[in-house]
Amino acid sequence: MNKIYFDHNATTPIIDEVFEAVVPYLKDQWGNPSSIHWAGRGPKKALEEAREKVCKLLNCAPLELIFTCSGTEGANHAIKGLAYAKKDRGNHIITTKVEHPAVLNTCKHLSKEGFDVTYLDVDPDGMIDLEELKKSITPKTVLITVMFANNETGVIFPIKEIGDIAKERGVAFHTDAVQAAGKVPIDVQDLNVDVLTISGHKLYAPKGVGALFVRRGVRLVPLIHGGHQERNRRGGTENVPGIVALGKACEVAVRDMDKETAHLKALKERLEKGISEKVPHIKINGHPDKRLPNTANISFEFVEGESLLLNLDMKGIAASSGSACTSGSLEPSHVLVSMGITHELSHGSVRFSLGKSNTMEEVEYLIEVMPPIVERMRSMSPLYAGIK
Ligand SMILES: *Cc1c(COP(=O)(O)O)cnc(C)c1O
Image 1 (tube, rainbow, N blue to C red):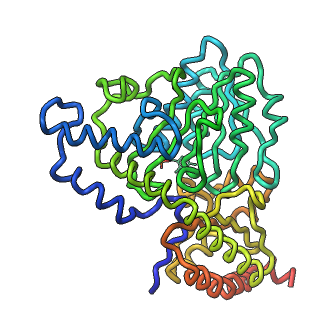
Image 2: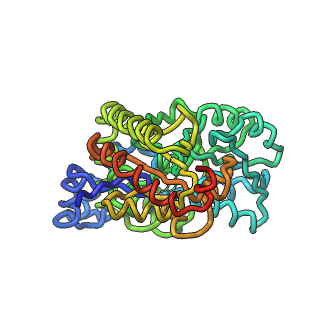
């Protein structure tokens, strides 16, 4: 059976170039980068070279980058670090209803510590309203945290505009760019973001490594206290192989982005068009054009998403409902529900997130196997019988 992976927003495979770059740092170059002797020198050099490569992807300076162990850690560090650093000035945080749990649950935790959190609504396209954002800012607002691109729908938020508003009002701004990094250009010189989070395993590096851009002059309270690594901003001996991998993955992302975007866009457009033509009673979710090139989120009426996924799995196709972190739970997607999609329809929603190695043949295969699966499932639905 063919194995087809359409779940790149959950995690990506490690590409060969990244794998090969890492091997020496799992084997011969095992030293501690903080050591001043011969064993530390190679790893230290690799660490700083990787830092420069990540900086190229974001267009920032090496001093502005902290390595972390995940996107979740980055979001925690950014949000708690900024909130704690500014708590003398105010206790109000603004975010959106459609953030990843790494952001939502960090904000939820802070609200137990006395912070007030405003969760901005999104419209049926999954987009926030900048006027609502402006109106939400109070003299007590110290932090805005809005994701760059949504992991479930691929909707891309107006980060530049949000950054301009934050700067004008003197509010710190963090963006969770885990899904955007490597898929769309990110230039922190052009965006008024103070802190930005990325994660290795969403851009073809392994799990357990990430990075945080912290603009020069922005103060963050450290999350992990320990040694003097990362200029006292994050303790703990660095994950050298992971960091080398992240550096390589960023280098490849910069090099291949244009080609990759064109490839993904073509596949996504064919997927959405093919399914729309062959399967009735569906809805494509998310803003029509402000969307990542790789993400298609489709609701199928009169179908239970989890069974649809199992049926696809039997055909070798891996996709997901909502985010990997919430799938398996019976809660409907908080993202789709925030967009005004009914609980029922959101239960019938599937996310196809494409990546580097996917081909047009794989998309055609999906378009071919999908209609009979959906038809068979609907034939068992009493509601659908009523419609027909
Ligand atoms: C995956 C993801 C995260 C979490 O990153 P980890 O490295 O898995 O902790 C955060 N935000 C978004 C938008 C994500 O897609």
